[in-house]
Image (cartoon, rainbow, N blue to C red; front, side, top):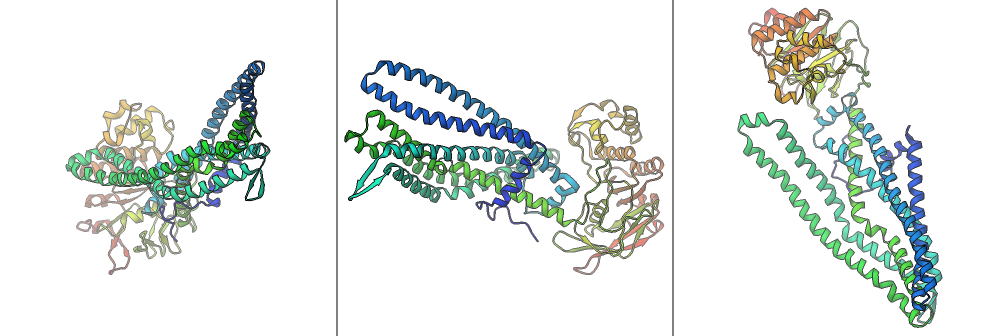
Length: 597
């Protein structure tokens, strides 16, 4: 089963998708404050509608007073206006303030949920394996959640205000309209019907003209994110690019990605221009249209100037409420695209979790790999395990091989046979596997890849990762740095830097070995974790691990013959026939003088 492509249905609104993203916050632990803020803003918006109704009647009385030269009434109406205007300003200010407060609280809660779901149990890694199904999770969490929350609140309060305004002014407009005779037929409240017809036809045309903007805005967000991601990758790997003299290729790549931004933006411009032509014509006509419709009654002496202006204002409020769809069309388009991006992200997370047979790992500093099957404190039993590539191609087939506790094991074989994939399965992060009679060891495990991950922050945080920075005292941190021959870093524990750029590959690998010394796991998996070191230093790191971690079982992937001396068992991957999985063969370390590739 595959997730729908993020561009397959960007313009379809699904209530199920919307509720899946929006509802959890309103029943969360923050529900009281959320509902209090929501109802407060809603009450203020309703009060603003009431003020607008009062101003509509004020408008009638004010222009009638001008027409009749009634100075006392004029002064009284100015005082009334001052009070109403002051109340309007106070309500407008605090309505916006409380809505922004609600927005940031809701965004904080949703961001926390998305971050946890994305990172929990290695889900982020399994999503990344499914190329083409999900893009730029950083943008979806950082930008799309913010746009979704703000867009939802703006549209919700806009719809509520429009509905309340509509029904408030419909009664006023019906009362003011009177009857209109057309072809011998008397039409009561004719201005209400005129407003409904005007807004209905206008909204239908607006959707016809603006509908392509939904897809264009969806694609624009994706292209912008791709362009930004490419720039970030160049910044992250600037040393490698400089060493390869790859600037020209990088420039070509950035140009190609920006070409998508450019081309799609022109599509938005052209369609937006057409929509602006339409909406501007519609808006300008809406200014004079109610006057034209009400003018026959005014010239017939049935209403005064104040009545004319009140009628025109009421008509404008009704027409504006009915035209909410037109005035908010661009916002709706952006919101729909954002909703679809978040929905596909949620689907990717759910599918990634469903693909693995792993229960959620226990929250520990060094997590224990656990899968469906029975955990065996006695060691690793591969049973009849078969490991596949994401596309279903078989990679590795086991046949009952076993690793006993304390039986340090070296995994060898030609490149591309699946050594690293097997190690990822042992580490508990590779979901594409099936079989029976396999067992993984109980206890704590730590996986050291060829290229260690060093978070941005202090050296103390990078050295302690993934454990807390205050899990070890300074003396212990300095001790392990000296043991892995990094004395130059002893005085830099509280220095904040991008350590993946500052340290050489060999220094990064030694720092990872220092992490293993701090964590002291029961099982330590090393996937070419010392490949950047020279042979003597690599041998020294293995001796150090065996000496300092006597209760830890090592499982290694390496290419140097000398590494075999530090292991008691060798598992060699041998290529199968074409289209068949590689198979494991048990070897003795002394047989490897020429075997390590």
